[in-house]
Image (cartoon, rainbow, N blue to C red; front, side, top):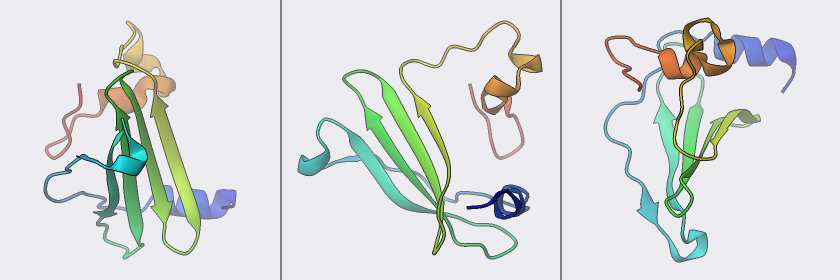
Length: 107
């Protein structure tokens, strides 16, 4: 994915996941729990999907967003409990942790 396509997808308005996300255990992914091919609705009709892996033994989490027909768009890997630093409000590295809107409340 080139920079122009990345920015176009990043800026797609109205992205939302409707409903609950259910993590399930599978023999081939043990001990990880997974949620796959979660539809991310958006106002532009771009086919965005989210995949999540959670390993309860070590607390690691992986979030991958893909664009259908293009490939991976973004990935976040957290290797343990989320720790928000004192300067989170000014740090772009931790910006995801500070999101608070009517439809998105993060810790």
